[in-house]
Length: 238
Image: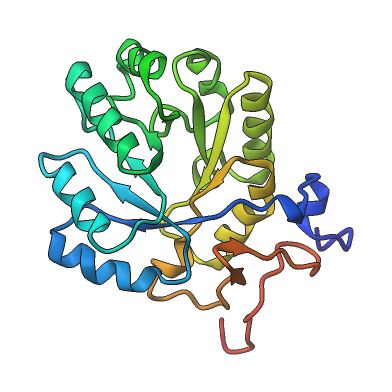
């Protein structure tokens, strides 16, 4: 982007007006700790919850006692019994959950496909998809995929994965790892091409040396600065 003097989002044909809401992640923890974590989520309009243990319902009920914001759920391959899993999915649907990532083990393609066929909520592949080469086997087994640029080896292949998912009729969540503004801005540039976003890396990183990306009303605002639009790079950084 800097070489041709264009912002990265324009190179990939992303429309800033189509920026989805991004979520703020609350990890697996005690109800007391989750209450504290939610205090840091004031700027966000969607909460993402890590599940996959015996106290899943308790965690959701704790969150619902504090906020009624829409929820994303990441089950982290934690559900082994498909019938118990589908019961949980219907319960989560009633709790305002919008999507569920990787409910069963990534190698259990039949189990995840069984849930996808019956679920009222989109079921997304997460651990089951890292690179473009993983996608052909997932068609029909999930409603969509989670694209993480740290797994896809960057924006180029990540963009290819988004386009291939669309050609399959699948939905796309663009996610992130524990990362600074540099990597998150790369995801933000592709986010308008996706259905959902989970790009909260700089808010979960205590040593981010750059400015946090601009967030307004739960959505990132894309910059016309060439490249990723990174700011806060001082002379004393290196």
